Structures are given as C-alpha cells and as structure tokens.
Image 1: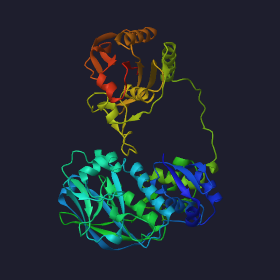
Image 2 (image 1 turned 90 degrees about the vertical axis):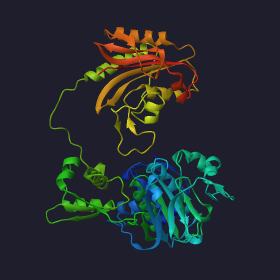
Image 3 (image 1 turned 45 degrees about the horizontal axis):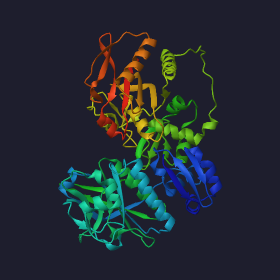
Image 4 (image 1 turned 120 degrees about the vertical axis):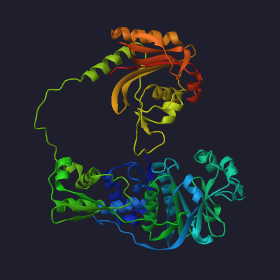
Length: 538
C-alpha cells in the first residue's frame, strides 16, 4: 500500500487545524500512521482511496471528518479556452484522453513535490504502472494551443525531460532512464503517441516522458494536464489531480477534445454520481438503527452531498474523485467510519451452536503433519497472481478456467491462481540467498471455473534433485493417506519430457509430478534443478 508523506505546514494550512488533531484522527478514516517526524508525517493509505494520495486530498477529507466543513466539495469548472485534436491513428494505440487546464496556481517546493508524488502514486494505484493510465503535467508558459494528440514515427526527435539534447523516440526508449523502464508499454507499436502544440513543440510522449519545455517549477502558474490510457480510469486520475490543484486555489477550466470523427468532448466532467440509500440498508449491513437525517449527516461528514427525500430515502451525491464507491455497500462503509466503529455496540448471536472442526481443516492439519514429518517447510503465498507467472513462466498454455480480478491494483495480481506450483517457484526465486537444499510445501485453495478446490504442492531445489526423489516423496504421502493411485505418462509442459508423470485416482487425473522444465527454471531465475508435485485433495 502507498505511504504518503504529508508536510505539516501544508497539512495544517489546508486543513485548518493543528497537526496533533489531524494525526490522532487520521487512523479513524482508514489509514495507518507509519512515521511521525519533525516536519512531516508518513501515512499508509488503502489502495482503494487514491483521492487521499496527496496532502490536498487528505486535508479535504479531514476537514469533513473533523466537522470544519461538511457536504460535497464543489469545484467550479470554467468554460474552455484550450482545444486538443485527436489523430485517427491514436485510437489504435492509446485511445482514451482526458485533459484539464488549471490556472493561477501558486507553487512552492513542497507543493511541487506533493504534485509529483501524487502523479507517481496514481500511476501505481490506478494506472498499473502507467499501462492503464499515465499523467502529464505541463507549464503552459512556453506552449500554445490548440494541441494535437497523434501517432508519429519512432524516429521523431525532441528534447525529453532531464536531458539537454534532442533524441529520437527510439533513442529515448534505450537511453533515457524512464524510457528504459517503460519501453515495454510501447514495444511492437508501429507508431508512438505524442502530444504537441500548434508550433510543433512537444508536451508529452505518453506513457514514457514529458518534453523538457513544459517542466513545472515554482514560477509556474498555469498548467495543462493530459491523462492518456486504455480505460475510463483516465478520467478518475484527471479529476484527482485537478481537484488537488484546486485545493491550492487553482481555477479549473474545461478542455475541448475534438476526435478524428468530428465528435467532441469536454473534460473534466465534475458532475457527481447520484445514488440512493435507505436506513433499512444501513441497519441490515451495520446493525445500527439510525434515522435518515442522521445518515445524511454522516455522509456529509465524509464529503458526500446528502439530502433526505420525503419518502425517507437519502439521495447521495458521490464526487467523481471517489473511485472506490462501486455500490451502496461502499457508502454504508463510509457511514460506519463517520459513525465510529467504537460506537457500534457488540451483540452476541441469538442462537447458540457447538463448534466442531470442518473436515477440510482436519485434512489440512493431517497433511501438514505428514509434510513436516517428511522434512518440508510450509509456506503461505498469495492466492492472487498474474498470467505471466502462472502460465508464461511455467511454460503452460493459458486456460479458460481462470477467475480474473475485475479491478486489479497491480500487474502482479490480476487473477486467482488455479494451481499452487507457480507460487512455490516464486518463493524459491526470492530465496536464492538461502542455503540449499530448500524443500517447501503448501496446502491451499485454488479457484477453477469459479469453484474452490484444496490442493497440495511441494518443491525441492538442490544440485541432485531428480525424479526419483519426488516419486519417493509422493509415494510416502499417498501411503500415509492410504490412497490407491496410478502413475501414467504426462504431457504437462511445465515438466521435463521423460521425467514427468500424471497421477490418476479411479481413472481421473488428480495431480502431476516430475522434474521442472529447464526453461521454467530460467524464467524464475533459478540455477539449480527443481522437482515438484501437485495434487488435488478436494
């Protein structure tokens, strides 16, 4: 989770109260205080609240929570004076564009740092490390609209940020630190995205680097913000950045985006989303019976607009920067935060039951006892993984039985695992500094075709690891479980041909074992042979 540095002077000025009050109340809105220093505090916020990733966003939330302000924070958006044209070819490369102009901003060194930190944190939290969303912030002093968002030849030259000489876009990807880091995002494209002004000056090469001409400094007053990407998350990031600048007195202006087909769009769209919630829903989820009027007060404390209608239903205005509000349960969570979890009285269940261990828990315990007795150490990796690790690195084809994460916060956690072995291989990769042999196992759940299954997997790494070792281990486990099984030829490409086998029970395949494919070892950066097995238990 991101750790945000909040400067005390900025925080106190924007919040309107003292640092002690702020620090003592921040944990109540769902954050952890990491470090309290002489001039700043470091706060860890949840990935679901990117609107809090800056001193401006935190101050806005705290003003409501502390009762200094209440209700929806409304930002005036002035008529557009800037236009940007989209090239027809850009729709095939990086099609979604959102822009804004913010004028009359007064920068200090700390506020510039806050803006740059917010930009990078949003790249991580919303942008999947710039793939899904990338943000450019530009000083307008040396550029002239209208601007153009286009696809250009990779040999196009300009001076990138932090360099003094022109470079082609190909050279930037090989020589500029940002280019090297993010080159994979445009790899294989025949043309690259570029934003230029009417005179051909380069604003941005998204999602890689800005031009040096538009660098932001303490004398900057007027800003042009471009956000490009692959989804509507672009608009959320744009609004978070624009409203953060507005908190410092900036004046937001629309930008007119003119598409290649002649259609037009004004961004940013700051109109709130309208939702309706009832006191019955709150009672059902929280177990507290409070009036619609009190619910509205709690919502206003969390910086929503809220009005009780004649029928008792609360109409809620959700600000566009609150990307975490997906349904009414999210609103009710904020009601609970404003109400105070400590104020919710615990109630014992009305019915009494006699607890017993679930049969799956008994099986887990039994398996753990066997594996530890055989000299293996238990590990507990994440259940979320990625296609790259789960399939590509394991040299296995992508299957159609995968459950994907709808709104992943990281490229490393986009799906729920269907097997355990890739996770164990990752752990071996991360522990190469430890002495060999390493023998680890996991008894854990996987999700296949939206259904949970309990699997057991184990791996062993050392110079003499071979098929005989893993077969003997597997025979010992199955003997302890008193299970009859059959070993047959396997086609699993994760294992070495001729040294792999499928496990059948009652004629059905339930597992696989063998020596891992050398290419798999290379993919995980391992330099020693690895043997392993995986079997379905339930």
